[in-house]
Image (cartoon, rainbow, N blue to C red):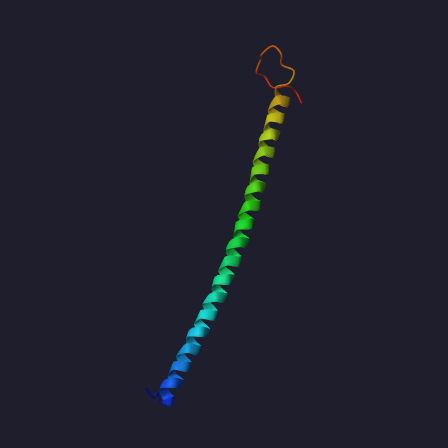
Length: 82
């Protein structure tokens, strides 16, 4: 079977376009994956930071509540003078 020059040129252009679009798609996919992994690391670090912040805040609240009611052995609920 003999193909004309136009048919071969058309096929070559279509293959070239297809390869170009595949390359663009791969670049976008790679950029999306990099952004996803970067975001995942950011979420991990922020979660750990928030956990430490919650524990610290709770500890400070317990400390100040104990300090507020320190020295009251008779069971009264009046706050101590600071």
